[in-house]
Length: 240
Image (cartoon, rainbow, N blue to C red; front, top):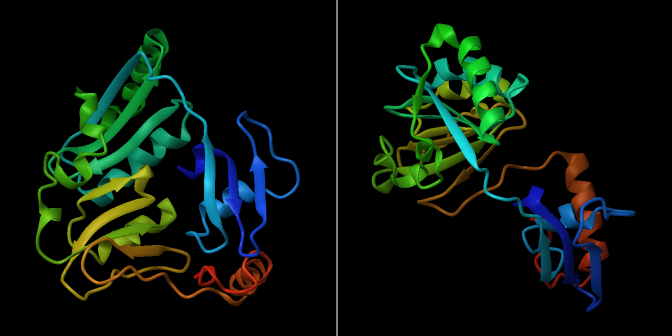
């Protein structure tokens, strides 16, 4: 949602009404308060208006499935698809399905890109599948993803794709990989926490309340300055 946000209006902790961005692209001058407000979790002001960019539904979609791959094995082809000239719109992995790579756009363009990508991934035996497998509903209730509904705590892990293999080595089989491995959805025993390399973030979605990782000193100082500027009386509880 942050990437679709192009304008905001909000009231800060002093009662001042602040507008930033607008309703068209390339509208930001000065500080980009739009992105700042998207990441502040309501700690810098009360949003009263947001402007979001939208896009038409693509007229054509093609999904390539690479079956039989474990989560860690899917990282290489997903990375190849995302870093190549194929303009993929989804690159994920689901248990029981393998790696899923979706291409969208005009019919002719989709056909050309899908053919080129299938040739590049020939060693993984790609096959055409139903594009609906990539829908968000499969995170918690789609094919092969029935597990998140009960037992243990559900975690959402954000990391660099290059860190995903090391994280997966310390987890039970995940429930979903997305963004080429940069997002991992996994269920752990109650009270357990995932192993995280520096820079990765994990949020518990079910079970105990979510906990953000400790801040490094530089970021903590920046957040403190922002909180003092936008909320000097501490009405919103600070950035954290």
